[in-house]
Image (tube, rainbow, N blue to C red):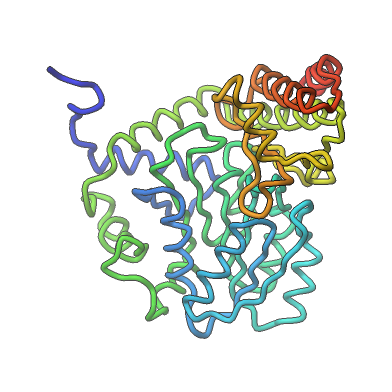
Length: 366
């Protein structure tokens, strides 16, 4: 008995390369794009370990937990790390980056997360990129959460290493990811004796065996189901139009924020300024005296499929996250999430205004 998910013809090198080309178009880049056979942590770590090492001085921007992780990897590689941390309820500014670079002219690597889905903020990469390029540092960007939800313009922004994943705003699979690599980044990797080689983390192995060979023979068997799912995801984005997909995420964010404010009971946006809030997810601060994790669990009891989550780690008691990305960037999902949160708050003895909240969300969506 044949099975559509199991009895598949092998994925050809030509088809693999064509998917890479479509990802490159999504990122508006002429750089090499490598599709990696694993979740986005694979190229995120691989790119840092390839491009940074002893002698590297890195400016590591921390606007959420992933920035903290990048600093740990950089230190593990032997790099000197200068952390620029800003409160998680805000975004870093280009001026803060400029000042840090002026104070430490030896910086030659800058790591930044575009949108932090975990904290709900997004950083102004269009303004930051030219500052980094003017300084001459290599620019590493985590765009896993932002791609598909807001513009990611690799070449225009001067990004040397841009990592994406398909599982958030792109609405695709979690088991495949991609990284764009500039010529400057390839040169930095080639000059780094500590860059991973003969390793699943190695970007240089992929370059030599795949790109330098004209993308004629894959280095190993691809994750076929994930590649086909990524291809289908790109089909959907191209059919809808990237601008329409991004607009849908922006509307979902605006509607969730407006509805949460109108809901009352002391619920408020975690990211203070709407302009600094990520369109991929909206984070909310739980009312005083309310445990966010307990509130989310209560809200999910009626519908476990809702894209609600408590904050991670130390934020679990105070932060609520509405993950309105991919297929959940819809008015129905926003309304259902607000209703569930409002009902849970009411049942905890905090009066809410659910119908006005839904009207505010509908108006913001329009």
